[in-house]
Amino acid sequence: MQKQGFKKFTKTLALLLTAGLLAGSYENAALAEEVEATLVETEGAENTDAESSNDSVASSDDYGSRSSVGSEAMVPIYGDSIPDGVYDIEVETDSSMFKVVSCTLTVADGEMTALMTLGGTGYSKLYMGTGVMAAGALEGISEYIENEDGSYSYEVSVEALDCVLSCASYSSRKEMWYDHEICFLSESLPSGTVDSSASAAWTDLGEYDLTQDKIEDGYYSVEVSLTGGSGKASITSPALLTVTDGVGTLQVIWSSENYDYMVVNGEKILPETTEGGSTFLIPVVYSDGYHVIGDTTAMSSPYEIDYVLTVDIYNMESLTEDEANDMLVTAKGNSTSEVVEVIIRVFIVFALLFLVTLVFGWVSKWKAKKNGSESSNKQ
Image (cartoon, rainbow, N blue to C red):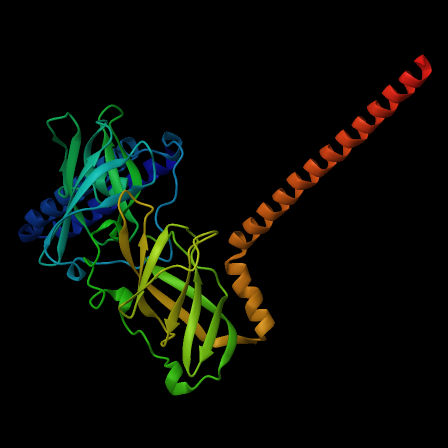
């Protein structure tokens, strides 16, 4: 309170001095009054905004559990990379209390808007930004649209897909803005929708040509990385690279078993195995990043997702054939181990049957011997 009083006193003193200096002449009197009115209005606006901001934005204590959205591996995709049209798209949110059950993305002249439908009706407004920004915003606030089934939809602008965006929701009951993070997932769009040549994800690719640099034939352990999609999928690194006549073949092991094929240089490639992660052997010519497609069956219907695969040829380690075979076995380790496990189980079953048969034979012999002894005693 003392600090606020001193601050107010300082502002008032400055105001009076300014007004006095300007009022030194008759001509400046009107200007002095205008300056005074402006300063008073500004001070009142600052106080009002501060009170409004504090009262209408939820604090950390007002939130339940929240989850992270997106991934650092994601590459933003903007409207100029998508043809004009209307698309169904999935939206990831940071809270089950703020769940988007359906969303329609509209692209027109490089600009994107979305009509999002939430799972509840507790929020009357949305704002693409933070709660503090929403509390002081004069425009850009999306009021709810009530649908026939009673659900609420909101039309908002979308800066980019595959990018973590701030979105504030206004609770009608608590009369506060709540901060959220959301992400529009390009992988849920129909296959081929995203223009890879126009997207920032696919630029400056393919700087290193294995055939021109004539890497010696052999086996190599090489670091690999993957970008694109939602950022949730990954591949095993280091990976096995086999070079024959200057042509590389890379073993790609996905973190998911749901990839049923890949497309590389226009060629559709089926997995060697899906156990323990879908495993592919794909051709490699360029290393500094090149466009590949992975088709996933993890969603309600299969989707082809665009990725950029980078092979770090500059830091690779030569392997012996045995070491390479070990890496290849690792890729199929789960399927091999399952076969071994089945063999072991069959062996155990036969061993138990043998033991049971053996014990049964012993028991039968013992009974026969016992019955023979009893007969001899009776005679």
